[in-house]
Image (cartoon, rainbow, N blue to C red; front, side, top):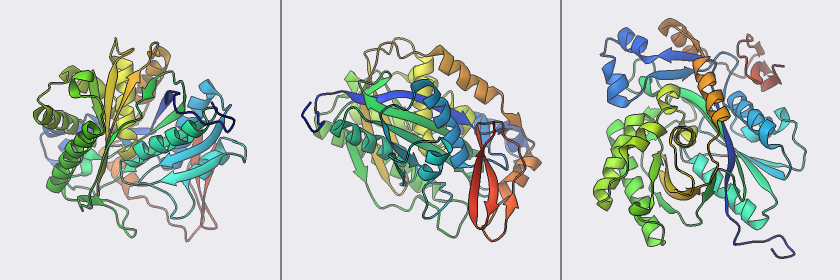
Length: 392
């Protein structure tokens, strides 16, 4: 290390991670019955069993702050100098969710706080940004939060691919979970496959175009990874994919196998889909929930290299690779995640529809009912500003 704190040889990656789920959950079998479709269309067709539903006093900020607080309770905050919040469900057009989380966590003023946006890809962009920060000063750490609430219109084709959740990751030198390789493959193209205008509360989707845009980004990012000298498919134990629905990962691996002539282990797909099947679509958090599931359910990964494919509509893709570290298995974290999913409060379809249509503006003061038992909650709107409080 030089006198300025610069280093180019230190491994950098994920020191620890934590997942947060919404307070409510909707069984997709009940939604299928209400919409007059075969439940297998959801459970087998798109590979989703449940959909996270936020309570009246939850949003991406409260979800992200709750995940981060549990993470930092384990890791501490020594060396933490940056908070990056990745979301496409931002609560304000100017003020970042990162700044609000910074205040809720009681972090010192000497911590920069920024929000990033590029559809579901923003979580990977935040991780890469964090790695760059740590590469300059390896004694620093970066808190990355990926949190989203996916919303589509009631009764639309996208409705069963809604969801809610957050993943907080601590990026550090000499990481305990995953050392991310310096080389990655990237792909960008201007495509209108999915977007949400400023005057809309729900996303607009061209489903067929979205699948082809995902495929193009995956194969383009893979080819760029190879052009940059990255590992070949035979050097990877598994690949975790962005999962707007878990069958998308199955399609993605089929595309990649056909493109490379390789064959990745299909069992890893099932292991990496365990949490996303129950969360539903969590946009920026989806890939990282998949990583958490793979680490929690796949034995023998220590010392093995895996791939991580992030996709964001519009479109941007990146294929990262990294080596899972010895001792990565954390049974207590896995147990806590299962408990968070199991303890969600079920809602009926009618209750879900009421929550879905309950939208608060900034033109009048509103106090939200106290529902969530998570560490933080959205308390309401005062003088046009959203307010958040600790629940304890």
